[in-house]
Amino acid sequence: MEYKCCALLTTALILVMLVNCDALIRCAKRSEFERECASCHVLKAPNCCVEGAITDYFQINHFEKMFSNRDSLEVESHANKAFWDYQSFITASAYFQPYGFGTTYINRKFTGTKEVAAFLAHVATKTSCEYNVTTKEPSASSLCHYKKTNSNSYYCDEQYKNTYPCTSGIAYYSRGALPIYWNYNYGEAGKELDVDLLNHPEYIEQNATLAFQVAIWRWMMPIKEHQPSAHEVFIGYWKPTKNDTLGKRVSGFGATMNVLYGDLVCGQGDNESMNNIIAHYLYYLNLMGVNQEETGPNEVLSCAKQVVFNPSSSSSP
Image (cartoon, rainbow, N blue to C red; front, side, top):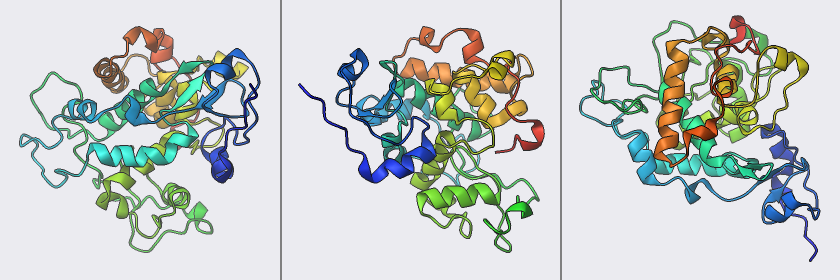
């Protein structure tokens, strides 16, 4: 039986911006991998394909257990009450699923369940209520805000005044489920999502789906120079160079912290910030029925000994 070329014609050009599995679609060969992934969108990279939907394994009960206290009366501020919900996350993720978010197979192994747990672990720690909520669950006080305004900075980088000029009076501070800062990030995210975030960053505060979309964009996109995306290092598509190996950078959850936070978290040995993120990831894996042994050895799970991709001057999101 001949295998037909899988069709991703309308998204081929966009795909290369988000996933370096390459956007060019090719006909499947008769290899073991492609027999198993015959129904996948098989990409040019011979070990990479995408298939299915996040709703196949991630249900509303998982979301509610992960973020059980997000609307609790124990939370002192109610400004964000009822903002975040399961359907907003699912709607947001649907845009990125064809590009591999939560749907990727690498070398015949499905990475989706672990990737969603990893992504939401980062979301949880970046949206923590920061209040003393009495609970043993590490994630119960998460998803309680969608912005942070405790800064006098407008986060306007004049180096981008020709491509992403700052709007007068607008502050490009932390917004979203995995927060972004700076005019150039708002400009890039808005361009990809076809939303005028440069002139209206407040849209992220008004729409939970958009707040999740911007977060997933940040996860999928290598938004800093000379480094991969969090998605690429997590699923194992990224291949470390000799310098990466010398710097103890390996694919896995630890590398996602390196990509997203640099030396704000990584390369500092055992520290509370890193351990908090890891604790959320392990807890979410357990909720989703994934054996924690699948996380790999400590050097894969942690970034304690990793040399950072970028110095602290460029570690801000």
